[in-house]
Image (cartoon, rainbow over all chains, first blue to last red; front, top):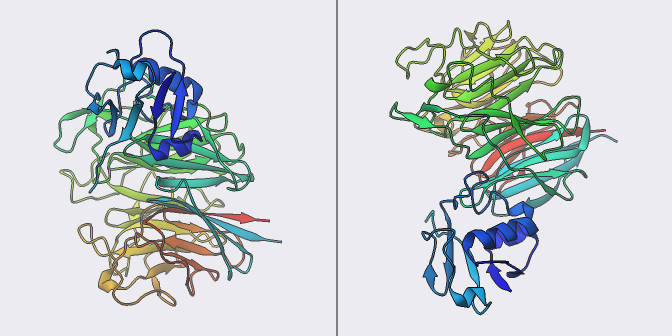
Length: 98
Length: 371
């Protein structure tokens, strides 16, 4: 089971708590997690990545295991600790705006 | 029993102000969508329970909400705004080609006849329409592709389509305005469009009388006389008597003809309102006096409406979508400021009272007249 932590605005939008859990089949990658997340919560489509290009929105970051994975390939496997549920995959609203 | 519902979009959420027909005591609900920028929300003229809201964030993009119970509860609807075909380029601030990129919905205009049909004016400038209550959106690409699009250049606020006027007499006619491209009209339901900027003079562009490139801030019409349009341009208050084919200036004795809002009295088609702002580099009222100006002659002769408004040390702005007029008699006039005040007048502007005073920056004000 994959654990995903969302920023508060997206929790409110999706109507979820601080953490959601997802079943992801196959390699656990950012793309695979977001595909499942958006399928379960369609209101999140377009809020984390672009509808068409699926590129990460500029002020959204992906953290896991104390690493910033935002610039990794969306198809790169995530750390084992994320894949086995020990650590969450964190979607972060970047600190910006002063 | 009659009443009004004022829909206020702010930089940090939406607020709904309701009152009975006297418009003396107000209930305030909100913030709805707290923390999100609400550029605009507007109700359907044929179903007052149906309200559309544009919720945006630099972080999380565009979300559209719909209420079917007058704003008590909201459902998220479609937020996929994809330009039709190869979007091409418009001009960037430095004159170089820049790809068309969707960033946000500035204005939502519900159909005059069908609560499930709503238009969206977006940045980068384009017009979209939904016929399923906001579930899906399709671009009316004839506007962007009619020929002048590659020459459009953004204003300081972005290349935004901010005004949509639906003609209540001719359902195939729509007027729109874009900063900083100008005004455009379709006479065939959105298939084909033409610029309607003849008569505008803008000294801040290389050819002051160019076909496009004018920074139109807002246009307005009275439903009984939709061929007469009023415009607040970047500088100049303008009027057209032929559906935008030709414009002439009606700034008259205004203390400044810079501003953002323009609106028309509910029952007097020649009574119009503007709020002068000192200049484009000083976005506050002249002399620190917040004054609404009213013309009862369709322009040129203006009277200052000041009763109840701050007449010293007021340095807020009033943004382009932040004035609205109800259809009671006498009509109510409402406007919001960047300082978070929403003022209302229950007597067509003769006197004003603040309805709320400490909201976030007000982005838009609309009003629904409830029967």
